Length: 221
Image 1 (cartoon, rainbow, N blue to C red):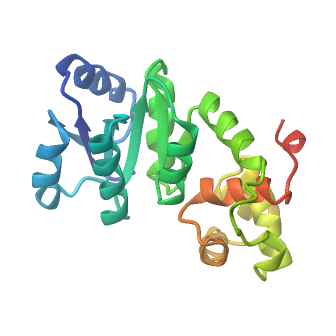
Image 2: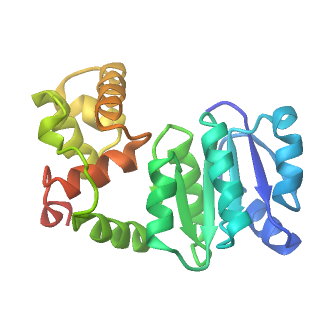
Image 3: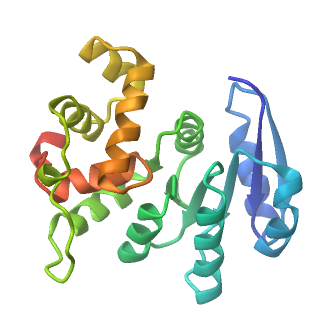
């Protein structure tokens, strides 16, 4: 894995120091930039060009607005949020807009390491406690929404196979080996799936799959 840049954004120096210490577990080389707030981040983002931004999710109107702006305007940057608690509907909204991950502030260093390794390979990571709640929240259809059913999205048999394997936690290489295709072909299928379902990442695919009964919750256990 080549050298990459991480921006840690938080007003508490001890939090930033804790993240940096956890990053020592990473085998890859990286450059770490500390910023005290999102205002500094927004003014320096074009100059810094980070691969990953690690920041707290502030459940305030301004905090939510800034987070949405970052995700929308910087699709090539992986954003990992930390949260003391989580608003399920807000997280779902951020996921639908391209959020790559959210961690509880109680996570162990190895989980942060895993999350970073996954997002660097274009995979999403959410703390298990969060993803279970989000999945259960999304599995109940909202009658006020006019969502397209997965089977009406012209998905191919191969695409449905890949969706089921993504739901079971397989990564790109594992899916390629199981289906006897190349990782590049898996990427092409995922891109087609996201386009058809109008989602922006793997988590979006999974949420749609469960909500539309392509896979059952008991299959994930």
